[in-house]
Image (cartoon, rainbow, N blue to C red; front, side, top):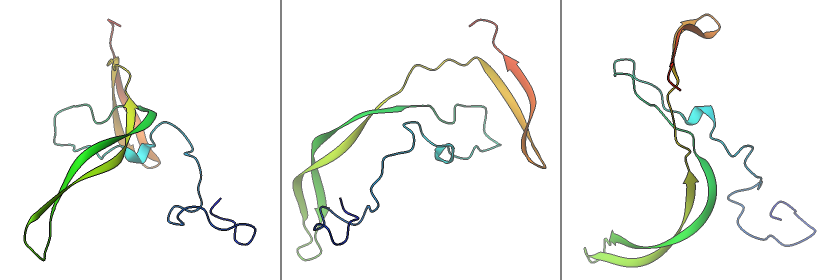
Length: 113
């Protein structure tokens, strides 16, 4: 309860205030990178779902300014587990830019599903 001011002392950091859950477990559209027009047709992104979190133990190495030597420490980091369902291509859509956004120009569907 990090956002109450007077009823109770603060629990946790205010760096992520207000705390709230994600609106959806799927990724948002702005997370998809912009497509380069000069490249060949390729898969720009894929859909994945968050299935959990865990932690890993890794060795962190950094150089110090004082002694110019490398310091290696074991660090515990949180990691997210993602699950991606198998993908099948069943069609290709071509779009053109119009006045009100993207317009469907052509569509080719696969016959062997």
